[in-house]
Amino acid sequence: MLGYGILKGMSVTLRRFIDTYTGDLRQFPRRYASGPVYKRMGITQRGAFTIQYPEEQMPMFPRYRGPLMLLIDPKKGITKCIACGQCERVCPTESIKVTRAEEKVQDQRVPETYEYDMNTCMFCGFCVQICPTDALAHSPELEMGTYSKGDALVLDLDQMLELGRKHAPDGVWPVEKKEAVPS
Ligand code: SF4
Ligand code: SF4
Image 1 (cartoon, rainbow, N blue to C red):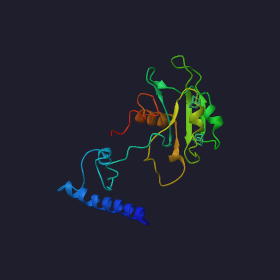
Image 2: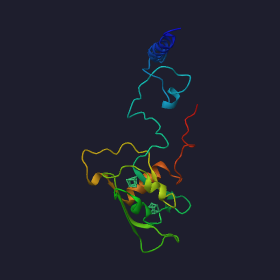
Image 3: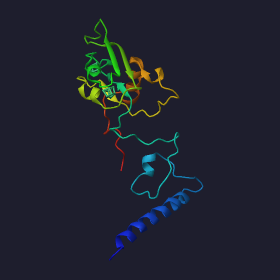
Image 4: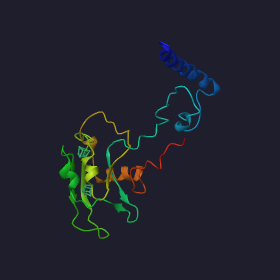
C-alpha cells in the first residue's frame, strides 16, 4: 500500500518516544534506572535515555583512536618499547621523538626519553601499526582536554606509561574481548 512504509516507520518512532517516558516512570521515585550504562542499553530496554556524564560514561569503542599510550610487558614490569625509533620515522607529522637509553634493562633496549605531541598528531595510527613489539596503542582516554595548546598536550615517557598502566594493566591492547558489552 502506498505510504505504508512511512506509516510503519512513524509508528516505531512514536512508540520509542512514548517508551522513553514510560520507561522513566517505571523507575519512580528514581529518575532513571540504576546500574551500569550497558544494562540500560540492553535489548530489553526501550526508549532513549540520557547518560549522566561525568558520573556515567559510555564504554569506549574498542577501535577508538585516542591519545597514544605505551604498554608494559607484565612479565618484566618494564615497557615493551625497545626504542627502535620506527614510530618516529613513520610519523607524517613528526609528533614523536624517542631516544634510546645507553644501558639495557633486563637484557632489553629501552627508551631514555619519549615525547608525543598531541598538538600535531592526526591519529592516523601509522606508528601503532609499525611498532614491532606492540608497545604503542591508541588509548580510550577522553578527558585530556586543556584550555590551550602547548606543553599540556605533549606527553613524556612517564605519562605515556601511566596511560598504558591505566588502560591495559596486563600490557595487551586492544581489549575488545575483555570489555565486550554483555547482551
Ligand atoms: S598517530 Fe599518526 S600522526 Fe599521531 S603520532 Fe602516530 S604516526 Fe604520528
Ligand atoms: S614504540 Fe614501538 S616503534 Fe616506537 S620506538 Fe618503541 S618499539 Fe619502536
